Amino acid sequence: MSRLCKGAALVAALALAVSTPSQAANETAFTDAERAAVRALAVSPGHTPPEASEPALADFGKRLFFDRRLSGDGRFSCASCHQPDRAFTDGLALPEAVGRGTRNTPTLINVADNPWFQWDGAADSLWSQMLLVVENPRELANDRLNLAHTLYRNGDLRAAYQRRFGPLPPLSDGERFPAQGSPHAAPDSPGALAWRRMTAADRDAVNRVMANLGVALAAWQRRLIRYDAPFDRFAAALAEDPDPPTNEAFPAAARRGLKLFVGEAQCTLCHSGPDFSNQAFHNLGLPVADHRDTGRERGLRRLTASPFNAAGPYAGGDDDAERLRFLPPPESLRGAFKTPSLRNVARTAPYFHDGRFATLEEAVRFYLAPPEGETLGEREATLDLIPDLSDRQVADLVAFLKTLDSAPLPEAVTTPPSP
Image 1 (cartoon, rainbow, N blue to C red):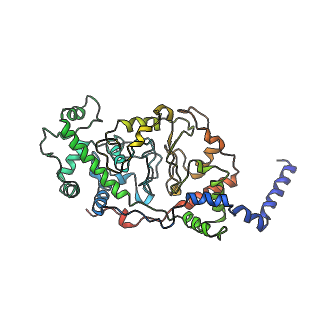
Image 2: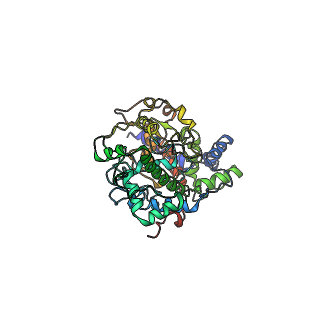
Image 3: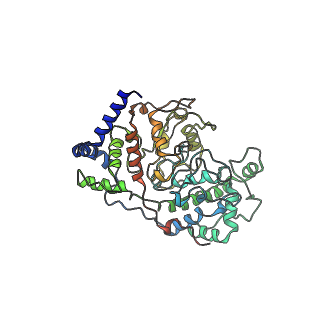
């Protein structure tokens, strides 16, 4: 570096170091428009977590969540990947259960009101998304007949199920209900043949057992609600005072980062609302990894083919079947994935649907200069609105994102039940 350049850099550094208090205040003061944008991210005053309408059902769902018997070989449970002490993630780029998964494990905190589930939206209800996990060969690798038999032959599970849903089908009749079988088994496999040989009524009975297990798990997941992060406290203070005092939980860097988030950086184009997600699907132009994941394109095909969607025979009264009439063509969303919530984001690394970024800083910098390479589908033009940011601005955004971590959930909700 030349002597002249060094001198200019020193002058700039000194100017920053001796910035006046009024300059520093301007960096962290919020305009009326910014305060309104922050209000749009905040939880409504007086919001309280929803109570399970049937506590016994939620307790059954909790038991199922931690029970390894839900997997085909009895080695894994839902909690194997959704670990409570990691904000219900696993800390891995890709999950490892019966096999190695192809998508990063998302948090379950605050998922109760989501309209779509999984990275590709292949499920349209909280209760039905669990069923995809049970029969995924890389996850719990079970099948619906084996799962029904597991409930039947284990007295504790059978009793808990029947208290809420009534008798199980007559699964002791091996002719009507083979030991294993599923419509998702390989076409000419014994499991697929066994499933096809069953009567339609008996297949329906087993499907209802699956759906009921999903209902129980959903009842418990509705308890996983937390909106008490430092951001929430700051947003409440900002609603009352245009310039609330800075504190350790929400420092000046976080204030600058929040101003960027709702303003210049354009983050709220996708990360909007109290969950910091518009719940929509976007193609970020990610270079193709080893697994050519078409995202929402595949998710739409799976969703519309599923008997467990909101228009199917197993849906409850709260399921919104009407929106299935207005789904876009699957190919129009090739390479698009759901906008994840940013709640608890500092605790849920690595990031993106395939866990390709290890740190928040890496994830933020991706938006500034996406890497080149083959992509699936067309990168969304919205991303062109994001300006270039300085190193300090990136650090400020990261500082703000770290204020979205909530307090731990009560142990009564997250502790595995006694055997």
